[in-house]
Every structure is written in structure tokens, then in C-alpha cells.
Image (cartoon, rainbow, N blue to C red):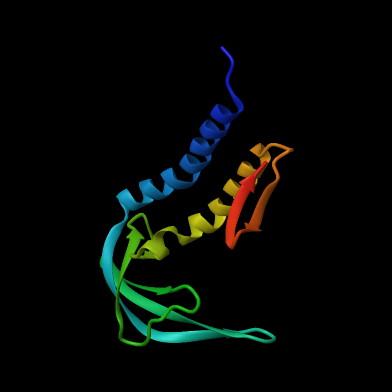
Length: 141
């Protein structure tokens, strides 16, 4: 039995997606949703820029936890925000939104899938955008 190039591409894509998404799905199944409050907004300065980040406070396992959020979030003091945290590690926290839970995975996964896909493009592939008769046409040769 011979496996085609596109079967290898599909299987590789499934493996890459699984390696990135399965750990996050496991984390989501074990994490706990909790309400936190922004207690203040801090900032860091470098040579040319200043970035702000909210500092959240919540209670977990009878302890008060203070967690510095990600940079440049739109939250201000006394805002209530839903977070997800790992009960085994209270500092393993993410904001309970699509971006908060998945943006880091997407940022790593997108370039990797791009490189994986480029690896499988045929060498004689020459896409072109052609303008004729008042219309744009995409041609692949």
C-alpha cells in the first residue's frame, strides 16, 4: 500500500493540531471558573514604550491569590472578570474568553502550519492574479 503525499499532509496536520490542542482541552477540563477583581493597574517601561497590565485578585482554596494579567488588557480598577485557574497550581490562570484561552496556542500554531503547508506545495506551483476585461481572476498553473 502506498500513501500519497496529501495523505501524509493530512495525517501530519492532524498530529500537529492534536499536539497543540489536546493539552489545552485537558487543562480546560481540569480548570475552575472563578470571579476575580482588578485591584490595580501596573505598568512596565522600556526604552521607548510603556505597557500596562491589570493585577487580578481572587480567592482559591481558602487563599487570596494575586495574579498579574497580560499586557494591555482593557480592564481598570474594580472591574470584575471571569478567570479560569488550575486548582493544582493557582498561578496557572487564563482569562475566561476565547482569546484568553486560545490566543497563545494560535500564535504558535499558525506559523507552524504555514511552514508545514509550504513544505507540501509543488515546486512548479505559480499562482497569479490576472486582470482582464475589467475583472480580477486568480489562476494557478
